View (cartoon, rainbow, N blue to C red):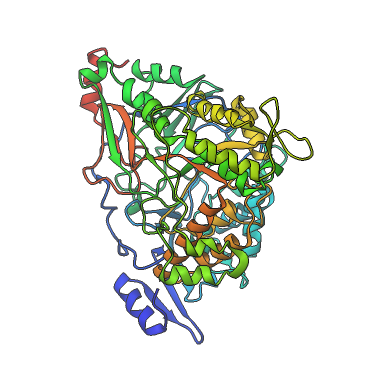
Length: 619
C-alpha cells in the first residue's frame, strides 16, 4: 500500500473515489473497500463480471443435510441450527468472488473513512427494508453489533470489544464505528462491514424469548432475498424468495438469487442422502466423499445424461484439513508425542486404498499459494523470524519448512515411520510395559480418544487408530451423535478431532481466534487450544501489514512456525469442487475463481426441468 497524500490521491482518483480534505486528514468516500490495491469494479458498475445478468428467475434449488437440527437461530450456543439459517440476513458490504479481499456496498451504499482508518462511517441505502417492510436503520446496525458482543460467542465478543470500542448512529442512515488505537487497522472495516444486521424492533418485542444465544425455531426477520417458508424438524427446511425484497435493483445483486425456493432435505446418514439424490429427492449434491465420487455415480440418470458430474476449479486456499490434537490435554504437551502421533498416519495408503487416489497430501496451512513456506527461510521472511529471537526453535531458521511425512502405500502401517514414532515416545518417557501399553513414570497410561460425528471419516480414521495402538497407545475411536459432538467441541472435551481451518489469500484478524492466545481455552475456531507468543507476534505483524510484501512474508513465517508446532496431522486437499446435479441447472461460462456459485449465481432452465419431469426422471 502506497503512503502519503499524493500517492493515495492518485490511487483514489483511478478508483473513482471522492476525497474530501480536512484540516488534519484525508477522508475517503467509496462504494467499496479493498484490503490491498485497487477495487476491480468502479463506482456505478452494472454487475459483477461472473454473473449472467439475464439469468431467468424461478425454479428450486434443493440440497441435502445429514443429521439433525433443533433451532433456526444460527447464533445459538446450544443445540444445532438448521442449514442456511442465516441466509435471510444481510450485511453492510458483500464480497466479490473474483478478487480477494474486496467488498462492495449492499445495505450500505457507500462508506467513508480517514486515511488512518481510525473510524468508518457507513451510509445506508434509504430503500433498505426488513422482510416485514420496516426500514433498516443505523440503530439496527448498532444494535446488531452490540448484541453480538453481549450474547454472541465469547471468543468473538472479547476480541471485537477490545478492537471496536464504540458504534453509534449519527442519524437514521449513517452509522459510525470507532477503532481502538491499541490495535492495527487491517480488517477492521471489513469486520464491521460483514456483521449481520438484525431488526432491533423484532428482538425488543420479546427480549426474554428472543435471545441470540438461545435456540429457537423462529429465525426472526432479516433484509435478505429469502425468507423461511416452512420446516419440519429433522426432515426439511424450505426458504422462498421474498417478492418484496428491496434489493433486486442493486448492481451487486444483478444475476444473483435466481431460485424461487431453496429446499434442504435432511437424512439420518450419508448413505440415505446419496440414495435420496439418485431418486431425485433433491437435485444438487456437493460431494466430499472420494469413494462416492469414484463409485457411487454409476446409475441410470448419470448414464443417460440427466445427472451431470462436474469438477469446477477452486481458486481458494484449500481448507487446512487434518486431525487436530488438543494441546490443553497434558498428553500433548510434549512435541515428541505429537510428532509420533503424526507418524502413525499413512496418507499414501489411505489415499490409494480408501480414497481412490483422488487427493493430494497437504503440508502447508496455505497450500499451493504464495503464502506457503518453502525450503529455508530467506529475505524478509527470514528477517521476520530472526526478530522473534528465542521465542522460536532455532531449527526453524536453519532447516526447511516441516513437510508432511511420506509413507509406503503398500500397507496401512509403515514400519519405518512406526519405529521412528516409538523411539520418540520412548524419549518422551512413555515406556511400553509387559502388556504392550505405554505408561509414564507415574504409571499413567498413554490414552488418546479420537472424537467423530461422521461415519464417512470412520473408515479413514480406523487404520490410523490401529497404528497408534500398534505403537502401544491406548487409542480409541468414539463416534457420537451430532448434538453430543457439537457440545463436546464447544467445551474442548476431546483429545483429537477432524477439523479444517478455513484460509484466505489475505489473512487478518480471524487468525487471532484460530491460533491466538487470548481465546485459546474456549475458542471453537482454535480446537488445538494453541497459545504461543511467537504465533501471537506473527499474527500481529500480519494484521499490521500495509504492503503485500509484508503480508506474504509474515504469513509464510507463521505457516512455518505452525507446522513446526506439530499440533495437527495434515491430511488431504483438492483444488476443485466436486458437484453433481440434475441437468436443469446452468451457470455462467465465466465462473469466478473463488466460488462455484451454485447457491446464488446458477439458475434453473425451465425447459430442461419440464423435460425431466415429463420423462418421469423427476417428480
